[in-house]
Length: 297
Image 1 (cartoon, one colour):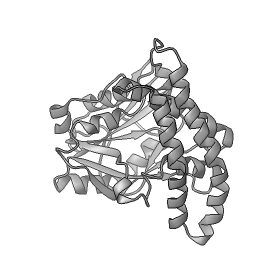
Image 2 (cartoon, helix red, strand yellow; image 1 turned 135 degrees about the horizontal axis):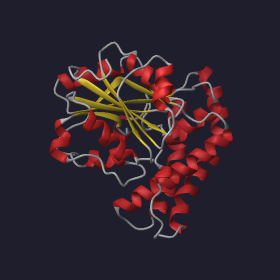
Image 3 (cartoon, rainbow, N blue to C red; image 1 turned 90 degrees about the vertical axis):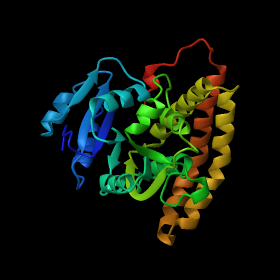
Image 4 (tube, rainbow, N blue to C red; image 1 turned 135 degrees about the vertical axis):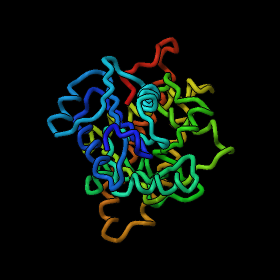
């Protein structure tokens, strides 16, 4: 229940400029079968409180006038909640049924970090499916065990006391950086029934624009984490991953689904080149340009 410190699980819903989708994100958490302490962290302004109130939702809101990078938004939510376990949900995502129960089951069994599956919220849309094939094939239901990327972790709060909180200067990958601090020391438990649906872009133009920005953000984050020419590395990794994503999706699809996959596959190469172009754009920009909070989401 909103703001209830007696709950075992807290959820920090993160919104930028009062995204219209924040209401649906919060409702998906409220619809879980277990009580949850919920706080919304919105940055960049906008009528987020009014949006929630109009939907009949009253819960704690941390509202920052200026945009926050993702790590700062996460940290604000950690500080504002009290539950032992802390999960995060971006405003462009939905928590599927069982999202909270699966996390609590694993945490109560001793897990300090629980990862789940990332789904496409619009599986019948060609552009959304192409986005999924390009960027999420290692986080979906059928990702290979050895190649799976752990996504959307919830954490035992004591991890933050031991390893600190999220970096506030990264435009992307702040959770990945945090997870490396305890990698090899403490295991991450994968729970396939913990499912998060991401609102992928649903039009070709939106797809290309979105992946370009994501490629740029990833290269910027990699540059801040160290290493030369991060954009080039990101571009190469992305283009190399295209055939793997297509092959994996094809092998696990039914005959009825393969027709959709073929249509989506046509959009994957231009989307991959747009993502790579975004990453390479970083390497040709002036190094003195500071990361912009405008690229926080």
